[in-house]
Image (tube, rainbow, N blue to C red; front, side, top):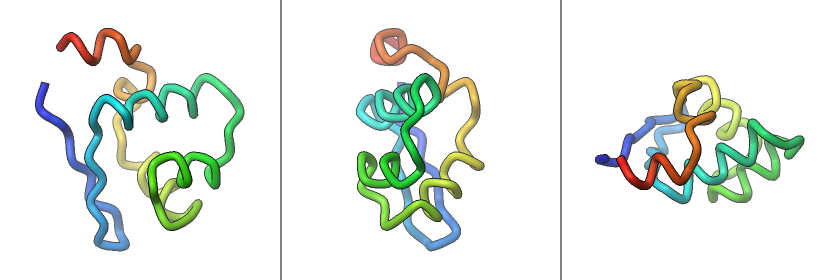
Length: 71
């Protein structure tokens, strides 16, 4: 599967690859904060993390990483 790219309001582009899916899975399945999510994805702060969460489709966040890798 080709990586999906999300353009944030700050102008930064985030590639949704295997590593990003793993972090997003962790975000939706546990209680990590937006600050932790931003740190794990290399974003500048919780604002960019929130912007990303608003734009990423829910199926990507809940899609198991192991299945994502195979597609």
